[in-house]
Length: 380
Length: 252
Image 1 (tube, chains in turn green, red):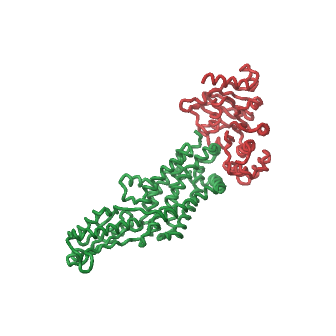
Image 2 (spheres, rainbow over the protein chains, first blue to last red):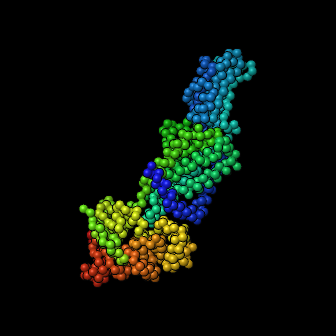
Image 3 (cartoon, chains in turn brown, orange):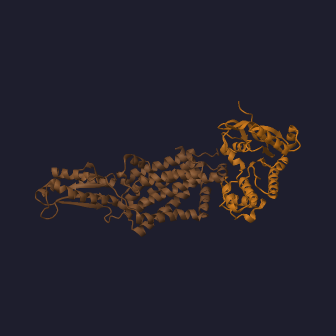
C-alpha cells in the first residue's frame, strides 16, 4: 500500500518526467543502440524462420476409448510404446479433449470409436483418430510418425491381415490449429518473446551500472529525486522501445512468413506489457546487484541461456527431464511463450491465459520491488 | 544526550563523526565547525578521508557513528531535506556527455524542482555568468576540462543552494581555468554561499579563509592558513602537506 502510494507520488511530483526526457534524449543521440534493438531481431527472425527445425517426442496424450475392448487397449499400449506419446489420462467426451488441448497441458488425444473392434472383426480396417495440437508443428510430425509406426506394428499383434478394402488399421492424424504444419509460424511468435527477453534484460541491467561507472549516478542521487522516480524514469522509455521492437518482429513475421493472428492483437499487446515489465524488472534487479557493467552483462547472459533452452522456445518442455521443467517454471518467458503462441496461433483468449498472466504479473511486481528496495541513494 | 542546536552562523557541525569500511577507518571522531559564508578547505593526502567526509555531509554515505548537522538538517534523519539545500560537485563532474551544456543544466535544475520558466531564466543567467553561453548547444563530451568544470558548477548551483560542496573541483584543469574558477567561487561566497572545498593544490589552499588538515581519517589541524603553519612550525601550507604525507608513508 505504502509502496503503491509512493509509486503514484513519484508520477505526480513530475521528477519522473525530467528523468524520462533525459533518457529519450540519450537514446536519440545513440542511433547505434536503437538500430541494434530493432535490427538484430529482424536478422534473428530471418535466421530462425528459415533455418530452425527440431524434433519432439513424448507428447502428453489423453485417450477417449469408446470401444473398451482388448483390441482398443492393445492399440493404446502400442501407441505408448512408440514413446512418441505419453499417456496422461482418460477422458469421457470430446469436449474434455478440446479443453485439455486448449489449456496447454495436453498435446495430443487418441480417439477410439465404439465400433473399433467390431470393424476389425468384420475384416474392415479399424479406424481411430489422433488429434494433435499442431500449433507446435514438431508435435504434429511426431504424431504422424508415431501413428505410422503403430499402423505397421499393430496388425500382427492383433493377428489380422490386410482387409479387403486396404490396410487393417486406419489411424488418422488430425492436426489442430496449424493445418499447413509449418514450423516457422511456430518459431516466430516465440521469437517475439526471446528477443524482448534478450534485448531488454541486457539493456536494463546495464542502465544503472553504467551511470555508476561514468560517475553520473553520484551526481544524480545527491539531488532530491526519489528513488522511485529515478528507477521508473529508467524503465518507462524502454517499455516504449520494447513495444516498438515487438511490433517490428510481428510485422516482419506476418509479412515474410505469414504468421497468423488468430486471437486478439489488443490482448497480446496488453499482456506483452506485463511481460515487458517483468523483463525490465529482472534487468533492473541485476543492475542493483552488479558491481560493474561487465558483471551485469554476465548475469544477464546467464539468465538468457536457460530462457532460450528451457522455456519451450526451441525444445518442447514436455520432452525435458523434470529438473529442466522446474527451472523452466521459474522463467517468465515460459509463460509469455504460452500467451504469445496461444493468441497468435490458436486464438486463445483471456479465459485460458489468466494463469500465465498472473504469474507474469507476480514476476514483474517482485523483481521491480526488489530493485527499488535494494537501490539506495548512496554511493557505498 | 542531545547535541545543542547549532548557532545560526554555523553551516556545518560534526560531532565525533566516524566512518569505517570493513577494517579501514576512513574518518575517525571528526569534530568540525564550518561557518556560514566562509570558503572552507578540507585538505590532506590521498586516503586521508576528505571525500568520505564530504560524502557523509551530503547524505551520500551513512556515518558509522557520530552526528552532523548541515544547514540545519540532521544528515541521518533529514537527508532528503538536506539534498534540496546543498549543491555538490563530485570529482568526476557527473555530466552526461551525450547531452548538451544546456540540457545538462536543465536536467539537474528540473530535478531540484525549478519550474520551466524559472529554469530557463536561471540557466540563461548562469551560462552568461560562467561564460558558457557560446557553448550552450555543444555536447558536454566535447568540452575541455575547464569548461566541464564550469558546467558542472552551473548544474550544482542552479537551485541557489546556501551551501556548496566541491570535491577536487580543479583536478586536471589548466591554470588559467583554475584561476577563473576560483574567482567565480569567491564571488559566490561574497554573495553569502558557504563553500566547502577539497583540493590538492596548495597554492589554492593558502588563499582559503580557513582550512582543516586530515590525515588517515583524523583531524590534525584546523584554522586560518597562518594558524596551521604556525602549529607545525613550517613556513608554508605546502610544507605542512608534504610533512603530513611523509608521516603517513612512515606509518604505512
